[in-house]
Amino acid sequence: MLEPDATTRPAPVGAPGSGLGSNPYVLQILMTEHWSLLGARSLVYTEAMSRTAIFVASLTGSVVALALVGQATDFGTGFVVFALVLLPVVFFIGVSTIARLAQVNWEDARWTQGMNRIRNAYLQIAPELEPYFVTSRYDDELGILQSSVAMRAWPGRMQPVVAVPGVVAVIDSVVAGAVIGIAAIGLDLGTAGALALGAVGFAVSLGCFFMRARRQIARYSAELEVLFPEPAASEALS
Image (tube, rainbow, N blue to C red):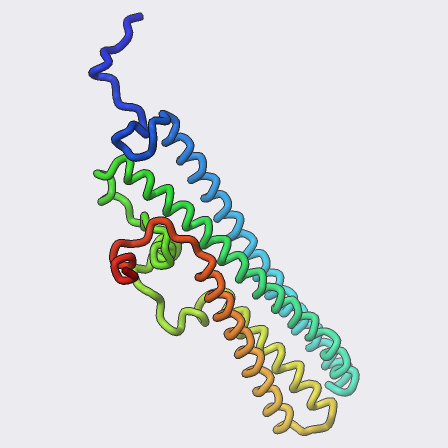
């Protein structure tokens, strides 16, 4: 067999001109890591949906059980006792679900950041392919957002309520308000008192969830290590 002419042989990926060293296996390594991060993101989505489904299923079963007990006890003392035993457990499941969803979102952001960095390496190897990429090559916060949810700008103020953790937080706060309202009925505070205390419990619970979310977002943003910021962002910081 004759060896092909060296002048017609394609240059190895990662040649000195590409800026990624002279290792001919650069592209294979990058692709392997890319698929690894894609698989990790898939597992993250699966866990997020599973944890949310567990919470919704426990809440649905609890509502059905409360309806049956309420009919059997004529919504008397037995119903109040049963509700005050069952609903706090549902509330705890909701709190743990929200906490895990926050961790899952941070993990997803990290995997997306890694994929953005790999995409940046792809474009260093073949800059002419940039018009064909619809996701970001930058690993800052806006680049992660563009690659994960296909947004070109920061979402509006209603986004926390639209996202899955926000929806779970609202539902779980309703459970907290229900627990306080049922406890008020058990203390013979009347319907108006129970509704008022329940509304306060709902507001306090929801406020605590959102304050904790803001602190977590700020902490995660501070921990985010950016290697390839978007040029406009880097110029604004300089």
